[in-house]
Amino acid sequence: MSRNNNLRRLAAGAGTAVMAVGFAAAFGVTEAAAAPVSQSTNSGQWTFNRTISNGTPAPGETITVTNNIRWNGGLAPTISALKDIHPACLAYVPNSSRVNGNGVGTTTPDATTVSMNGSWIRSAVDRNISYTVQYTVGADCARDTALTTGAGVNANQGLGSTNNNTGPNVSVTKDATQTTLAIGPAPQATKVSTLTATVTTGATGAVEFSNNGTVLGTATVANNTAAYSWTPAAGEAGQPFSITAKYLGDATRAASTSAAHTGTVTAAPTAPAAPAGLTANPATVTAGDIVTISGTAEIASSVTVTAGDKTCTATADQAGVFSCDITTTAAGTLTVTAVATNGIGASPASAPITVTVAARPAPDAPTGLTANPATVTAGDIVTVSGTAEAGSSVTVTAGDKTCTATADQAGVFSCDISATAAGTLTITAVATNSVGASPASAPITVTVTAPPAGTAVIALTPISPRAGTSVIISVIGADANSPVVVKNGADTLCTATANAGGTATCTWTPTEGTHTLTAEVTVDGTASTVTKTVTVSAATDPGNEGNGSLAGLFGSS
Image (cartoon, rainbow, N blue to C red):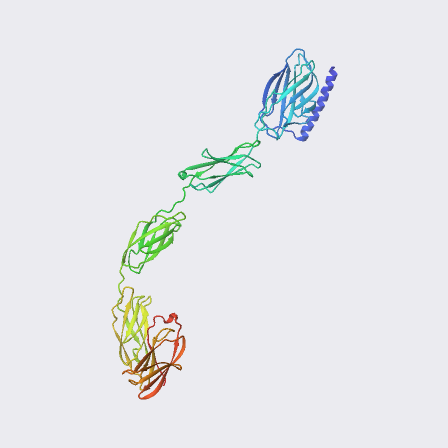
């Protein structure tokens, strides 16, 4: 071949080189920063000194293969083709091949070969030739696996040589991944916590969960997450934890480990400790009085205080303080304990305390009795008032009549008595509580005058009757031993005989409503009729409860 032909080939190669640079600029072919790998291999009488720009490329990355070839024989042959052999998953970058820095016509006879074609004459003084070629790493390359490369020379005189495994090998890295970890609820002894790992979208395979470097277990990735249930043992309470999630990778994705979640395993909740610091205020009471029991217990626990056969409950506040009231009932020494309860169970009973309960005495005699008015006509009402032990029941006695009342919180009571017979009426009062009755009060007297001559009256006991309750009807002022007829409207209730004092009585059980009572009597030998209008309240009318008084009104004849 002539020198001019060689020059033409070089010129054509230069043109191809310029075109290749243009394509590279147009398509943005780049190479990532990488660690080159090299290998020198003898093949026949040739030495292939090969360098790959990155021995561990990532998918999508462009790598450059450089092969510096030396002829080691005698008379140098003419080279017609330089071949670069590569894994099928590496895609040749069009127009990227160069021979001695110049562009060159290139073919790809199969998926693993790039053939740079031309005519290159070597000589004894110029035994070397070099080429470069670029590939784009495909996503279909096996990952973390040695992929072999090779080279070949086609030459005349039968001096060509091809070696499919000249090296160096390349290993395509797996795609980087990221793993994050969430834990909920916070680790607690004997309680399940869910460890949830989230990995890069599309990842498959498994995640390994560890605590303080010890593997707890694994879970399969589904929809980018993997979850594992961890229950710390009771003995791990108070111990530090450091939980990590390690994605183990798959065929194309690299492993990755989450940041550690650290902390201390909390103890499992337990039933409360026994309440403490119980106090009673006051510590000495009279039966029937209230004692306030206070103390401390687990915050928000429900506390039941037991004192004899009585209980009270309270909830411990945010400071753990509780208090509740007990009403004492019997004299003696009262033993008080408390038990706290939470969602787990009940505490032991607290240390007991005691309260001294004194017996409640019977009331003192009522005092300050007054009668209003102090002088009445037979049949009139007298209101008796006074003071007695607060809450006690007071019975007022006036001759053969009584009335009752309950002393209010100030100890004041009053009730009404009907004076039925002329003369001096002596009145006393007795107070009663749960223990017993008081002595009788100092007596007071009321002067009762006889009704005007020729008159009679009707009196009722009680003065405010209730339906269904027996009422005593008294007719006062009749002639001694004379007959008396008592009627309710047209109905005769009874026929009685007046006693020596001129009083006749009978019993009536009324119904609710307004009634007109009449008494047919003889007064000073003359027959007359006495009338009284009575209002009877309902059987459950609370305004009339306990009213035991008598009432009398003058009747009309």
